[in-house]
Image 1: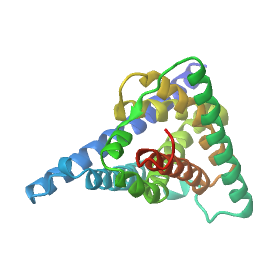
Image 2: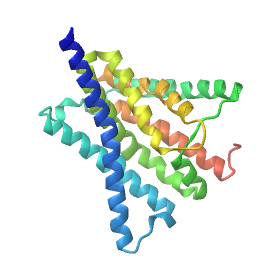
Image 3: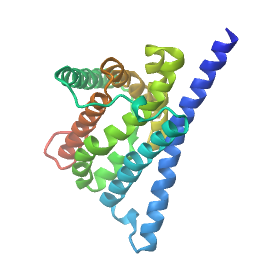
Length: 245
């Protein structure tokens, strides 16, 4: 019993370290990139679209990927540890179904929050996009190319897999979702941060289940990317006045 407890405690510690460590590594890489660009005369703070591009590419794209692959190499697990393959028809069915459940869940939660007058925080990307709506247009393709794949590789492919070794399927999905939600705390602005994290925690198991039941990270990455892309598209339409807010 003690050995099992020690193993599970270690798994949680490692998983949390991977989740928060990956985010910290991304921050360092993005800041270093910004410093290099500033030395070259490029001020990212005055160019929001470029700031977002650099943050996404060097953060979710490069940093998350390198951090996850470094862990797999260091522990001898190898890249085959993460299930990745060209999607089958079944995988595509899971993708469509997962997206419907994920977005449908957001709509239900949003209606409940509105009914009770509960406010949720805002992601800092939304604030930047409100200053320059072109940011939202940039984020639509990046959702599929970098945000979805990068975050899913680290939080589902590595963190969740590591937890599943000690806890089994559903506890691993829940714990990985909790870590994934709390990591987003650092990118939130305004009141209602706990509400935002709770929403993310409730919805994230859809991504975890999609990966677990298909064994294909492409599925969860596509669901994640499609969800974000739709959110950014709607935000662009609202900010530019083409859709009522």
